[in-house]
Length: 222
Picture 1 (cartoon, rainbow, N blue to C red):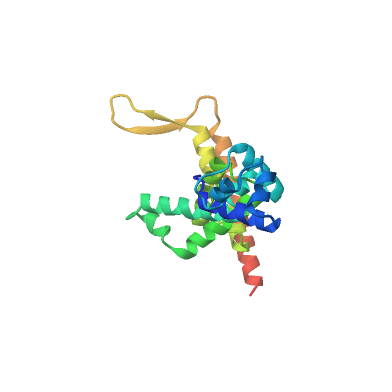
Picture 2: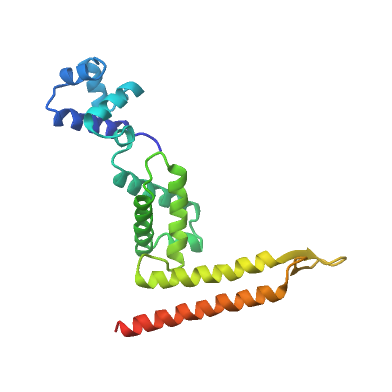
């Protein structure tokens, strides 16, 4: 993510003032930097080098990433907003894009995302993991898997439904019939279709149990 020099400058200025130092005295503690250089940092004209970034972060009691990008909560919130905005523009005019224009839906996705970031203890440099969590949160909320009691039942039922599909894919292979432009599927050699049907019965029974438990819970909650 791009560093905002002005925001970094604001954080350096805050650290200096919290220490009760003028620019000259502050510079002496940062590899003997001249006060004019400190002024350039604070006004966002340029950034300290890596050695000085580490020194400033250390005396400020924060990490270098926090100095560059802000505290993790604000960083991830801004990161999410930027990624959603980019995704919304990419899918503008589509059904997916219309979903991303729903503020209630986006707030649910954001809440899910921020919870997962905290749960997995991610930091500013984990951009690949952050992108993956945003995608997972969008998918989870679309499937009704928010962090609510109802979402817990949706999660269980969705996972069981996914298991049936995965079993079908595990047991079947796609084949093209000779001389025909038609694709069919058949049981893979060595696999017993009876096992597939028995496993599907077990999973379907579990799905019914989840539905019954959900109905019982919400009916008793009234």
